[in-house]
Image 1 (tube, rainbow, N blue to C red):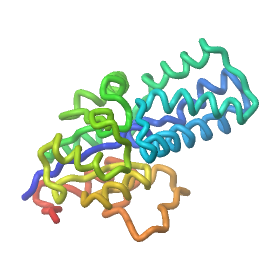
Image 2: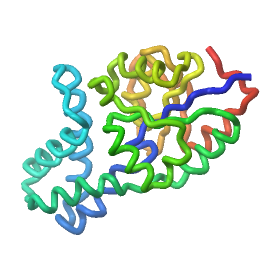
Image 3: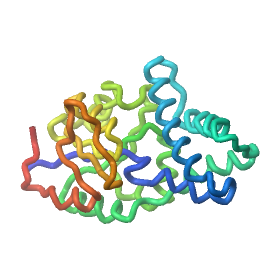
Image 4: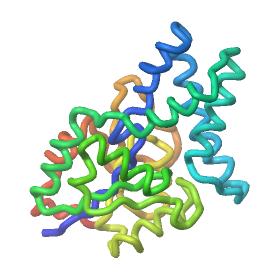
Length: 230
């Protein structure tokens, strides 16, 4: 019988960043979907770039710069006030419907649950508190603590150090394939949350240990006597 540590990615796994399209719809109409998608893609790309260059800035900087780029590419314009409003709404994203019951089930089984994010800890805590998730978590761990970004192996080792967990007892839970691959490369277990049925996992030689559609599905696959230890 082994208690596991579950480390949940936040954006795209616990809360939906594409929910921002709802606010963008009010501002830019039919181009909201295109703008929202490009914004999210560039947000991740900028974090990757900064990680590779060793030029770290908080994820909020990546997010704002990605918005500015997406606006330029789409030929749209938003006032400074509108941009700041959108940034503020990033703290108001709602949790997916399966998140709270899924985490509650894992905790009821005796497992430890933490948030593990590219976002600064204070921002992530505020976001998850507003979404009703923070009180269910044992900790919030941010890459900001070591000024690196996922999927740098050092970030996943930092997670193990912060949780005092062994890799064989630790699971990274993410809807982002690159995050899952980063964790597996660093020696952790990883589960891919395939929230979009049309999503395809990268065709590398690294695969998730598990693929689930929801966190409730994940909880159903674990119990204290499961013995999921490497």
